[in-house]
Amino acid sequence: MIGKTMVMDAWQPRRAVVSVRQGEYGSRYLRIFLQYDGQPLDLRGAQVTLCCTAPDGTPMSVDCRVEDAGTGRVRLPFTARMCAHSGELGDVEMRVRSAEGRILKLYGLQVKVLSENEK
Image (cartoon, rainbow, N blue to C red; front, side):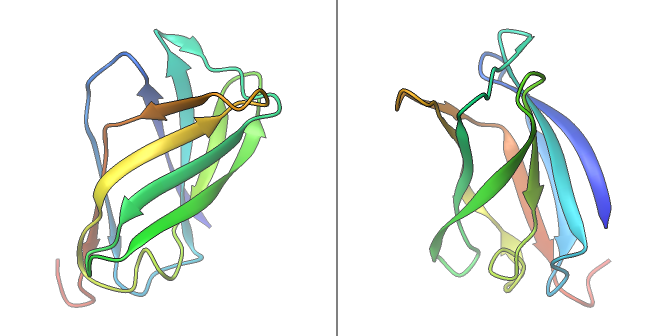
């Protein structure tokens, strides 16, 4: 498995661009450190989900695995649905649902799915 690491902060409006190839799933993932105002987001008891729209317009969600709740580290796998069509994933947001049911949305991830022949 090949991974890339990035930070997403609820209070920082930065954009991170990631590219994957069409059909290339199960071999790549993103390791994301989720933060709130520069501090690690406590993910104990939380569920983290990537919600987006596929390049073909289909809404989808992908569950992330919490790797280290204390440091806010999650692992986002690139799934077959995410990599089925070339183009850009739209409306990308990370949703963190706390054990109490509160939801925090983080933005700033841009995922481009390149066609198999695209360089």
